[in-house]
Image (cartoon, rainbow, N blue to C red; front, side, top):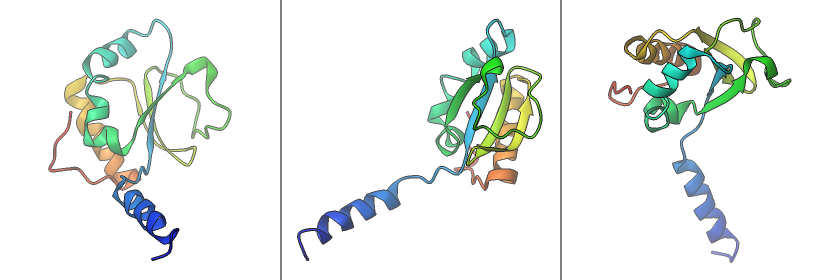
Length: 125
């Protein structure tokens, strides 16, 4: 094996071991939003540790400062609004925060239906 082939093979193996991120979860929030604060208290600490969080990493944006390269289906009116985004384009949305008992199953179904998410043994947050 040449001097370059071995490192390339190692890099290729490492890349194949990494999870493929098919989507992002974009949380649209605004200062003073009580439901955003409730989501922060009930969901935010666990989210990155879940299968959903690994599949669709969280990005936070402010309602009044949406990124110009974020292509949304329609104007965001409520906070929090959770956008499932692929390649900078909204593919699904959850408006409001229905509480942790409803958030996980609704998010899971949206990710399955719109982003090809496959749950890991049915575990949620």
